[in-house]
Length: 152
Image (tube, rainbow, N blue to C red):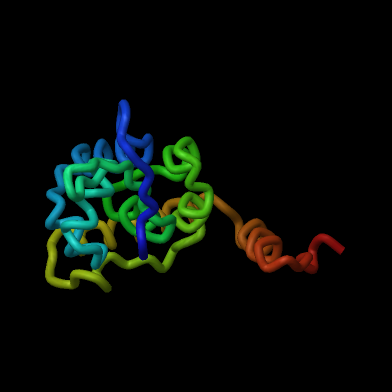
């Protein structure tokens, strides 16, 4: 999971850094808690949240990889629409289709991770409850690239 670096830095941090930082702060999470929940090093997270990295007196813009953005966003609560606005369409899709993401896998002892798993499962249950079995089967078939029997 290597970040992309550009330099030198002029102006504001990248939009993805702003989005992830705001979501983390809304959730009241520390960088250490995000690290524990995602398995991403604190030093990397600090670069991703700042959107920049200084090395040998030169500051460069840092853009996290899409898989890291998806993990962080799932933990801090950044929405797929926010991710898309920053150009992270793959990460947004991963959040939307990931019903199995369990931050507890990365940090089973953290209260935050366990609370997030409960919240995600509760949200999934409420969304599923809004659709009929037929609608859910059609959507699963659509995502699998096949047509459901009812469409014939």
